[in-house]
Image 1: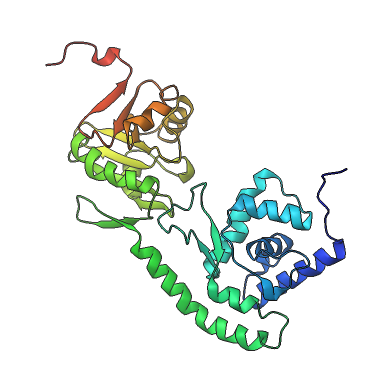
Image 2: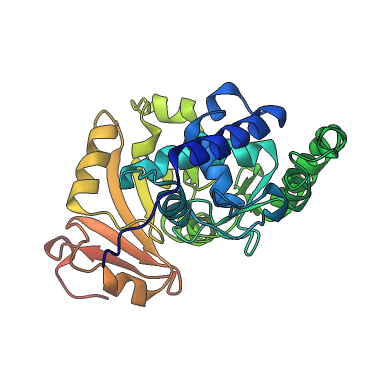
Amino acid sequence: MSNSPSFPEPTQAIKKMEEAKAILRDMGLPAAQQNERSALTLLALLNLKVDTPWTEASNPLLGITPIMEFIAQQYGKIYAPNTRETIRRFTVHQFVEAGFLIPNPDRPSRPTNSPKTVYQIEANALELIRTYQTNYWSDQLKNYLTSIKTLQQRYAQERERQRIPVTLKTGEKISLSPGGQNLLTEKIINDFCELFTPGGKLIYVGDTGDKWGYFDRESLEALGVTADAHGKMPDVVVHYVQKNWLVLIEATTSHGPVTPKRRNELQAVFQNSTAGLVFVTAFNHRSDMAKYLNEIAWETEVWVADAPTHIIHFNGDRFLGPYP
């Protein structure tokens, strides 16, 4: 007896996908999201199998991988594992921007790049979609499209309230996306920099949500560095003016420490720096550090937020000798 999944008739699946495309078009999604990938993603988010009527749509919490699994099981479309990012960036992101898909409604503070990120169709959008192919669709669609801007503003305000406020030494205020490594980033700015780069000038702060949380491009270029590949930037960059060091700090939560490979990448990005380079891995707890001991590169520093006044140097001979 075969355990292979029984896929629906192609004509049935195509009909359901075309209906989903029509909904996306009517809801004002751009042409780039009125395609098979987006239609199948919408069907997964609504838990709609080929033979499930639109009136029975629901809104389960789903991550990208479960979405892909639903599509494969119910519609016979198997996406390669490396398609996850395509679905996230070119379908799910636009659904969120359109206001009918909510990221992490179960835990708004969860960072968007967390592997535990889930999405859910917004309640008003669900009620609208349930009227598709009924006599109520046209009127409900008009009402929804009239109200969606208000909904988008409300969710934007809710996301803004969740952000982490950080005040720089200059008095300038920035805010970071909630959760994840940004909580550690806040400690780096407030604790590490205060203790180990006194009088230092903050140049760059990455943000899990916006990537460029703060960037003093002119100051970095004055040190000979042109950052044109922000994906390679560390989480925090500080110019320790007193010693003319450029301190490159990785906040290790969802990503790993400064490994030999990562150290080489950073050296390549900052190779023209007129300031000396210092590489730092930051952890929340010493137990976190223990998981990565074999990966941390030599000639780098480690700082642990729950013991903020200490720093660990991964080399040995530079500081060999008695302590006072």
